[in-house]
Length: 152
Image 1 (cartoon, one colour):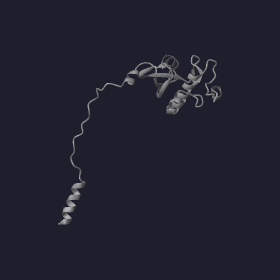
Image 2 (tube, helix red, strand yellow):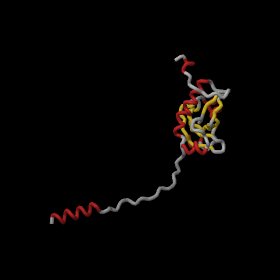
Image 3 (cartoon, helix red, strand yellow):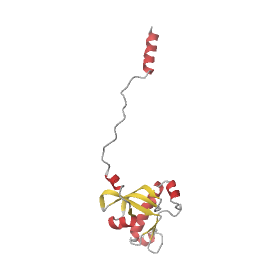
């Protein structure tokens, strides 16, 4: 008798129990965040954005543009605290209007996000692996961090 009670309890434990009915949710009517409304605006040129707002403090990869052969980034600027904006970066960025320090800062930001850009995007844009997102001065020279110039 004890065995039958144990068996009945074990059988009831293993059988599925009816639960609450799962219903699909209706489409959300929530408002988008601030940066998603900016995505509808065309991206600004990276040099124009930097001269207008300063060097970005946070940069994130968003997409790429095949027609312009550019990488589209979402950048937050200190001069524009409300929301980040979309910025387009060509393969070679001619930054003669920027100071050497600003060019170095921009190159550091771009070096940091290069790994987050999918390899497929680099392939589609036909960008050489060694020469991606390079900041150039007015004479076409690459920007480098030369610590000797800083005296350190």
